[in-house]
Length: 435
Figure 1: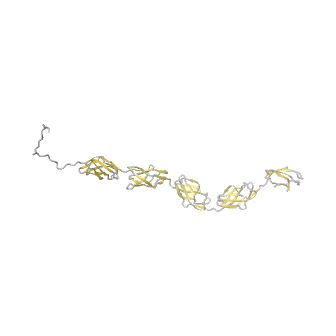
Figure 2: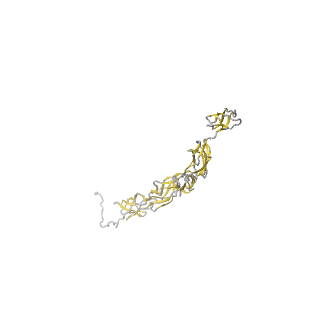
Figure 3: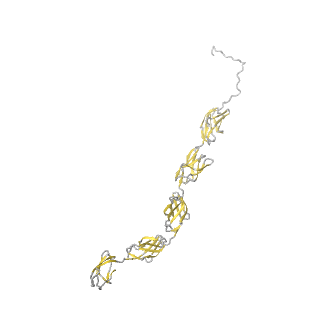
């Protein structure tokens, strides 16, 4: 106490100021919410910081959060978000003392899509393949194949799968992209575009000789780049039209009976309905040859008649004739005889189905000599005149004058001239023969 200070005085008879009958509670306040965004599926753990939070409940767009725990001082609480609709949701805290809204609320975000696979994984370059993609969060998705939109997209209720139809594309692998409002994902492995397999509607003709060589036409679709096999043996001379709707070719040789016919392109293989019937071709026959004789020097043109001569080759004593041409019916052929040795030669005709010999064969004959002049062409009847004969093929020759043999015959090496001595004869012209 200070000595000079005035001491207060109290009036015991005065009334004290009245006390309030109740204390007013303070309403909650919020300074921040963390996190302030999360998936629309809910389940996000959150923390609210503020004051007077004791006894609080929390709603997100009117839906109660769960697992609310308030700290002892009432300055923070934790909880778990409910599911919500994508977008901003008002967040409201309510205590016995009042209600307050969280500034900025809470943003529900849709998770980005995921894709686990596509079925089928391959389809035609022409498009039109129905497909299914499985994954998550696919609601609202669009799908592209190499940047080109698929059509007829339908997503199931849970957003875990979708169906659609592929667009046309180029041969090879195409990235498949799924896009939703929440993001984009790529389907593992993508989708492989393949050139469609060919189709065949008919083959004409569908039968022909086992020897092969039959011209044929195939009609179908997507035949570009095709090869054709008959029982696994390649046809030849394949030509495909510009639209890939037909091709022509030539059959290979085959075994008598039905042969599967396969058409193969880069897009696959198609089998011709009914295949192709290879028919047995009888062995050749030969009835004769004309002429039946000719020079040992060869070069004689000949004709052989018979049956089933198509594809024939001809030999004379094992030596091939040349320039063989068979008529359309296979009933005759022409050719040129090779050189041969004097005498009879076996003539064999061979086709893919067998061999036959020409009856009587062919006789090679040494060509007759020729004489261009005799010098001198006159002499005494007593004979003894030396003479010279000029010609061809004189080798081995003998000479007679009216049937009487000349003597001292000598033929030069080339057979083109000879010399000798005339016999005695009767006055007059005498026939001179060279044999």
